[in-house]
Image (cartoon, rainbow, N blue to C red; front, side, top):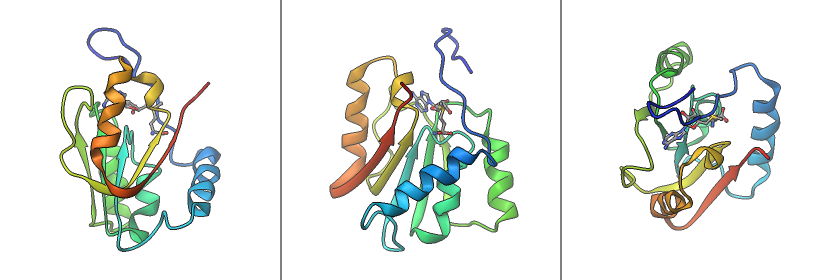
Length: 139
Ligand SMILES: C[S@@+](CC[C@H](N)C(=O)[O-])C[C@H]1O[C@@H](n2cnc3c(N)ncnc32)[C@H](O)[C@@H]1O
């Protein structure tokens, strides 16, 4: 996927990709990351394949995603699994401040697609004090 300037935005994992289970197992191992008392944000959530798998274990979830290409898949998964505490916002994190602050932040394979390192400040601004960020990038 490319933006209107030809910048490559990356391609989300598919819902049945094995990488999703593998990465979620790592998330579960982080002490205190998962919990019904915590709000979760997934930056660059794509189709929501990670975040929506965690939705029933969190207070609420918000995905921020620049492209609307995967929104129908996101909504379809929500409906099929009767998830009612989550949403996906079409949102460019390089052009806006966070719509809210959260307790837990996920962001897989997104930072390498940002156009400037300054955009990483968004991650800092989106986190409440004493909260946790789990991120990874492709090398
Ligand atoms: C490689 S995909 C990873 C998607 C998902 N996190 C996963 O691991 O399956 C990168 C995602 O980040 C999104 N993205 C890239 N730049 C973004 C930006 N500035 N704001 C919000 N989302 C962005 C892309 O549209 C794409 O869905």
